[in-house]
Image (tube, rainbow, N blue to C red; front, side, top):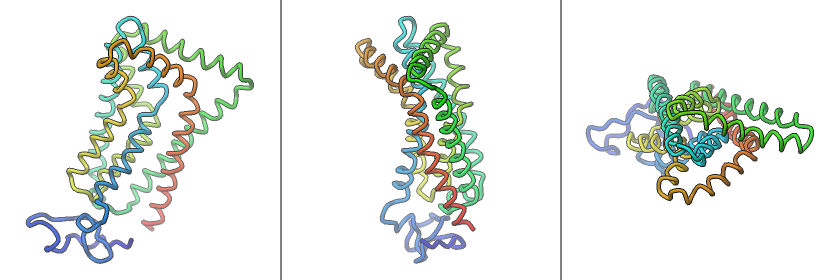
Length: 276
């Protein structure tokens, strides 16, 4: 729809008293926040949810958490350490990212911007590179026997590493693992930019950020909560889940990176066309 960014306020009759509205207007000169059929907050939430799930679906992290929880010694405590370490990394990334994104001129405007185009395009390219690298690694396996051997070797090395690690070391590894994971940046930063650039009410944006944070942490938080609630009866399920994730780890990474990479790249290029 045509937008008129030069208009800075809604018509006085359309907004509550003493409340200014500084975001994009529709072609009728009316505030989109108050007149849209679907509230901008709902649209924002539907955009953020898939990105949050994409951050959560990192097979190596999920497999590591499941390895810890099915371990015989101190697995529950180290599982919490991994979950808290990952959430601490996400929190640090959120604080730094929000500090930067809220300083952009487009903050709260709801308008297409060059920064949004750059962020989406760069994230899409990064994810497609991740998918290509993982695909190339898999294509080097010339036989099915070689693939099975590599699949069995990786969990055994991971289990050995985690069995030797204490809770504090697991926390540090989890924190650093998230900070240096390309897939996290390529999905979490665009999601945060959608939130900061949205014209939705502040309450909606806070809700969307909380949902994004919880979804991004869900794959390491849910298993340890299940163990806390259900006890040792859930360990066989966690063990089977670990075997399935380890077997399909490469395929999951390729699919997630390729799908989100293509969507973000197309969205970024579309933003470039709109800001021209």
